[in-house]
Amino acid sequence: MASSQLSRRDFLRLGASVTAGALITGCASVAPQPAGSAGRAPSAEMVELSFDMYNFDPWLRALNDMFADYMETHPGVTVKVESAPWEEFWPRQEARLAAGTPPDLSIGDPGYFGRYAHKGYYLAMEPCIEGKGVDLGQWFESTINDARYDSATGIVGQGTLYGMPATFVGTVLYYNENLFDAAGLAYPDDTWDRDDLLQAALALTLDASGNRAGDPGFDPEDIAQWGISMIGSYPIAVTVWNNGGELISADQTECRLTEPQTVEMFEWLAALLHKHHVNPTPAQLEGLPNPFQVGKVAMTMDGTWNLDYFANNTEFNWDIAPVPLGTAGLDRVTYGGTNTLHIFKATAHPEAACDLILWMAGPGGMAHFMKTGTPALIEAARSDAYLSGPPEHREVAVELGNYSRTYYPGLKSDRWKEIYNAELEALWLNKAPAAAVLQTICDKITPILQTPIDEL
Image (cartoon, rainbow, N blue to C red; front, side, top):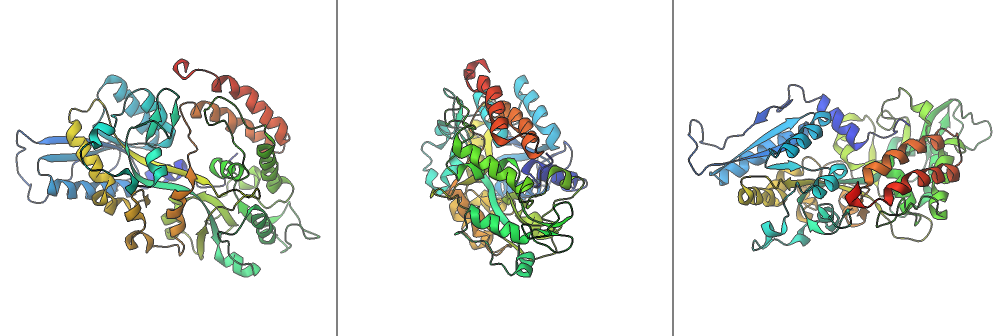
């Protein structure tokens, strides 16, 4: 279905579309120069490093400023940024990797990390860190784990460290304060569970005559405002996890979609669309811009990558809260994903690249990264410099680093999720019940999950 959220990848594509004429565009290669370097010929000892980045203007600007600072204090190093649009970036990079001519360093992505690590493209960080007094406890543990990969099992989150974290994002609950005020409802907080969310969504869903969902006379064919928008990959997984369910087993060998606690949550999610009418259906979303941004939904479970976007592109008061708890008495869990930094094994300058990546992940780099997302370095994330911006409860975007987990558990993720996402359309379109849809998915993805990773 068309996603009800501005997804992370959609957000990046949007970001790429507005960078025409910005600081760095297309495949331009830009090398910021340190102060006083004009006209200076590079010495024989000069090291030139390249950092590969897709076209996302906030990061491109941050990297230029960051590398200018770095070169000011490291006169023997020149760092240049190479970039391309998101859709071109990964195929181009994989082609360069296959040819053995990659850049020195690059941003990573949760959807690509496992594959790249398994193919041996990344340089292991342990030898780089050794003897430098690096304490990995300075970063949120989940962000460090997002750069670990176990080549024996194909699982992300454990094993060898193949990079360092920069910023992280995660799923939170956004809410429109104006619509809550109009309905006379208290704002969401960390005590909310799934039942609280549903009751609020019912109260905040209105038809064109002003009737609330569930009231006599409510017209589900003529809805003017929905209570919630949460049918997307990350919110679905978060809802399942908070009920004690799983999509697949931790070792990536078994489908868990047909287990009772998982089926229950897919039935609950489908009911939001087809029974309670509090979440827009695919047909209702057709042609609609981001429904939260334009005030058509009162709440959305969405990513923290939208914090600054919404701050600059909404005309109402809003805030964020943690995702609701489940009703099974379990600790809260949410999705978290990390923008990681990596050194390619083929670099001709491993020591210089190591020094640079540790600086980028440390206080020096984080002074610039905090303008682009939640810093993975705990000290930077909890600083006034990061927490002073809107929304009011910005710390929610920081603390999720303590209870988040990956949605990309390993090497098989892309293959089984392609089938999973396609087959779920039948549920969101109300063409089949949850149990039948989930059984079909299990039947189709089990051969993938049971395939040894070396045969993929």
